[in-house]
Amino acid sequence: MEDKIKMRIILNLLVVTAALIIGLFYFPSEISQFAFIVVIVGGAFSMGLVIPNSKRNFKIVSFISITLMAIISLVLLVWNLSDL
Image (cartoon, rainbow, N blue to C red; front, side, top):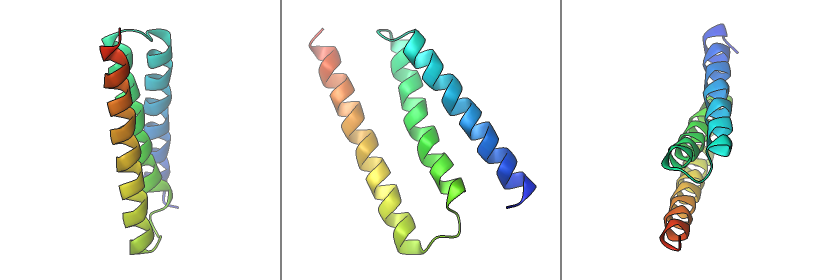
């Protein structure tokens, strides 16, 4: 791997880890909800950097599955917030 890609992966993982810590620390607030969305989106972008040389079909299936996971988790998050 190139040094530029390694640095991007490290920075993405740092941002995702920081957002996860913030989300867990401020859990029942709006800040934690935003942090968890950042974790989901950052995880999707990090996966794209980790597997850049994969076949096109695998990338499409991975993107669709991550998108569905993000949509389902956001729907469940909003659904649980409406119960409060």
